[in-house]
Each structure stands twice: as C-alpha cells, then as structure tokens.
Image (cartoon, rainbow, N blue to C red; front, side, top):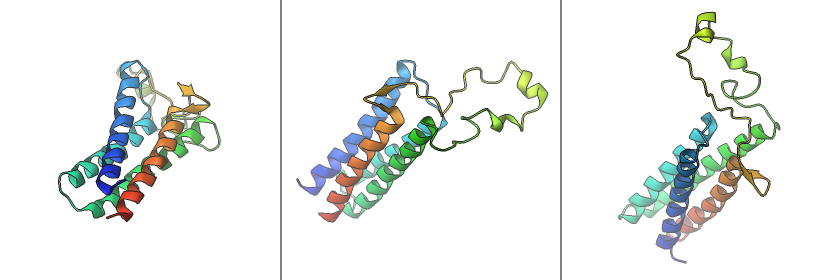
Length: 153
C-alpha cells in the first residue's frame, strides 16, 4: 500500500474513533476526564493527516505516529485505572481524595456538578475491553500504519 493511502487510512481511523466517542456521548455515555484526554491526540492525528494529504511534508507522518501512540498510552493507563491495576487521577477516581481542597460551602453548594463521571468505572465494554481498552488497541494499529507510511516516504 502506498504512503498516501496509509496516511489516509490512519487519518480516517482516528476520525472514526473520534466520531465513535462522540456517538457514545450522544447515546448518553458521558465522558470522564481521561476519556477527554484520549480525544485530543486523535484530533491532532486527523489534523496532521489532513495537512499531509493536502500536500504537506510526509515526514509529518512521524508526528501522526506519536499522536496515535500518545492516545494509545492514555488508553492503557485509563483501562488500568478501570481494572484497578493502578490508581488514577484523584479528581475522577478512587474515594474522592481530590475533594480535600474544597471548603464545606463548596461541598454543599448546589452549583457544583451533580454528575461527575468517574474515571475508574467501566460504563461499557465489548469482548472484555472497555472503551479505553478498545481505544488503546485500535490506536496502536494506527501507530503501525503511521510508521509504515513514514518509512515509505
């Protein structure tokens, strides 16, 4: 497969994962903080791929690989937090230790968010993988596509 086709495929892969994430959100699966972190590198990969496909230097494919690897790494970290293999950010996982900086008035305020989405809860899974796990697995396939494209330039 040619480098431009690989770049197109990797770009469309990140776009599809973003669309899938937004689709789940429309269906009522609100994203947690780490879910949102995973979206930014995909957006960067889509932008990088678009620039390359519009005539930009193909050496940018290495940045596409880095973006896909970044979201894959965040996905592994997030999946590990969900499976309680390691601790996640205190602001969205565990027993709420990240709430220690709040005053009594803050905790009693009715203006605070009422539906904090916890990063350490699996809200959807398929074949034993959560959304974070699927993001990681697919992202590392995209890394291979980006690297193959970069080596063919």
